[in-house]
Image 1 (tube, rainbow, N blue to C red):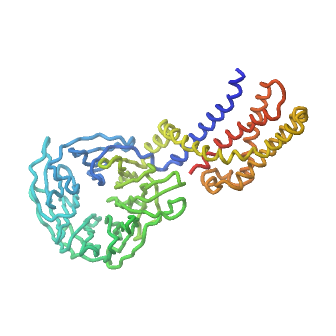
Image 2 (image 1 turned 180 degrees about the horizontal axis):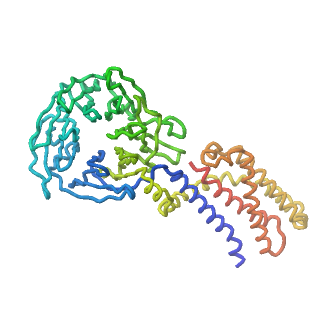
Image 3 (image 1 turned 180 degrees about the vertical axis):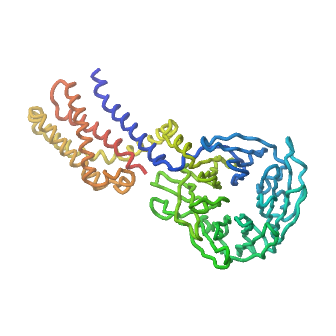
Length: 539
């Protein structure tokens, strides 16, 4: 029993500190919650690396192996019901560039051939070819028609595909369209934004309109000429309009390391040549500017606080907690509102964000690479019912945090070599009395114990404050523990706890022994101190 009581404090300290660090790690990784949004939840797995396709309110589609999955999202729970359809042809994976509206599926297949198939209840119709040299496409229901906007090598075409055969409504002369997005305004004007590649290093941001009442279109307007260097390219681009302005959100990939910037090119719809350029720069890297912002997509619907767009930015609240997360911003009166609401917290690399606005409810969907050829799909929303239900810590959070804590305890292995210096002066003091005045050591055991403890604490605190990596310590320690005075008080508290356990140990030995008591105190204090500060000292 005595042996158990001697080692019990070591076990108790370990359990208490393990529990505390598990809680700290859990809260650091998951809190504060992303109010007013909930916690992103997995809603599927896709095979190609591309965004999901919105096919209706709270409905989206994605490719998963040999299936086209149509998913309906419950806004209150973010759970999905799915319908799986076979793919109409294997060449849908040639470019994984497809659009679905109702029962009509369009995709760019082998040889850049644009194909069209209809769902006929249990199978797809035989695919028909619409055009060749297709490079980009957009599908949208407009004014009672289904408009298919196709970027090609040589032009951009708008088809009416409401009937069983495509009807060409308008053709715009362009060189090579690499990206096309379109939006309809309240006046029935169909606004088209296209990235037109003139050469390997030269691009035009081109803007066109089509009046859906007369089906007359204006010629393309070059809003901005972008000249890329040999190691710079356009990574992605999207286009949208609000009531007064049009917006290109274009990601530029720079250099061999692939750093990315997100530029906004805005213009008044009444004067499209008056283009303003700005950059979306978020202070999401521990309060500093993010070095990577990219992958923007616009919501087709506009809210009272502007036109919403989703994008990815690198984010960190500490060197341990960070990743590439999804944010929601808004555009209004031709400018970005300088807002960035975080909607993901996967602490990995989020990809392919898309956003949908339904009244005041906003839903974001994004992906995360899980293997080389599979991508998990996540969804999040500001639906109040879902946010209230999901913004809670879970047993999974605790398990993940508990698995991380032993890595922080590993710091003890490094710090123990430093800790060996803490008791040196105390043992020199005690050894002097053993050699010179052994009787004095036993006759006044209490006094010599306290002298050894004070020498130990003075040495411990001096060495820690003078030679430890306090910059790293202060990154993770709470604000009240930032000063040297607070650190001193922390070590004194550790010493008080160890002294109380030493009093218990003292009752287990036959007589007072300064060396034995100090050694027990010192061993317990080294154990408590190293474990106690390991969370803040680990990188």
